Image (cartoon, rainbow, N blue to C red):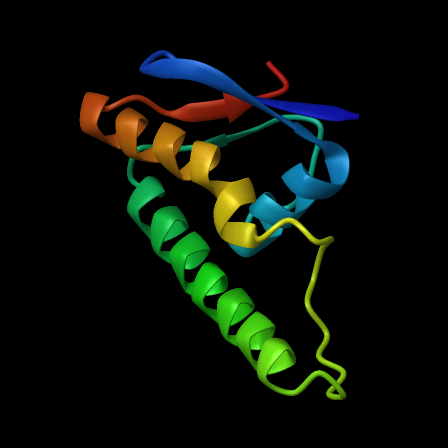
Length: 105
């Protein structure tokens, strides 16, 4: 499955299922074929993504400082900051325009 996050305020953001599932889990949404992030939910979603990015980067920094240390970092070699950036931009633009973000509809 591919996620296509849409808003009337900006261009679509398309993600593979694993990455879309990760974004939804971070913002507290159940991964599903369709859904909505309302304008009222967007600030909390952005805050959750930014907090997850900080945790991810701290874990990555520990791994670099101690090459022998095994640190579980969710996902692949793409930094969460880079993967989430288009989604965060979509959320910010949608919030400014007062538009919900939907997927699967």
